[in-house]
Length: 236
Image 1 (tube, one colour):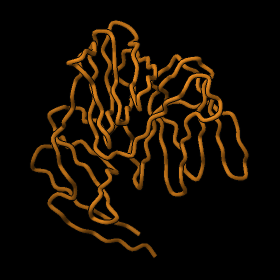
Image 2 (cartoon, rainbow, N blue to C red):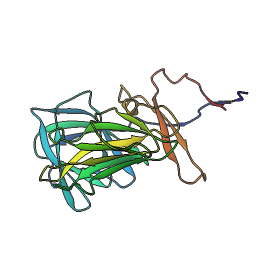
Image 3 (tube, one colour):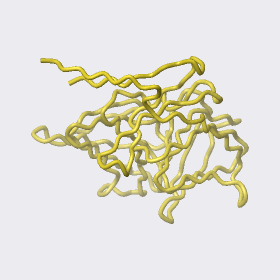
Image 4 (tube, helix red, strand yellow):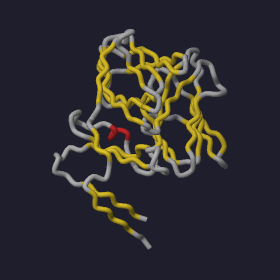
């Protein structure tokens, strides 16, 4: 039997300002794009004269990035980290607090450790665009009972757990690669992390198991004006 519970609320989520930022490169001592701990920067627009060569500084190591000009790709830099670019450019991004986003950072010629995307049972993972399209990533899909199989991956790929996706590279230098995020309990496309208009507020749905720590699970752009009503509907 399908039970439905309906709660009418004036605002069933946290409503915050857009909070988008534009970083104008190049990076300097006084001009840095720093992503703090427990924070992720979702990049949705890169304007430059050519492909941007740069690096991500994380845990006292440097990982090469290559970002082509784009208004459709979706990149993610998970903190703590710094994105360093050496050329004039404009990078449009939004900071998301406590987002379940992780970043693949691969050491050169490391065919052993790599980066492991481990998806627990009941969770769904989705890939962002690769932070370095020049690096060919070897990907092994590891599923209990199905062994380890070499596969090709691309931005937007989704996987339900339990499963592991192991990323390796044979490139000599350190390189950043695909970031990923956990969709949690809702079907939520990372493209929707950004509102189409920078001045409109955004509805953020968060969940908590102890009413202390809150994790964002859904983001919705609010573009219908202030006279708009929301309700939370829970179906079982």
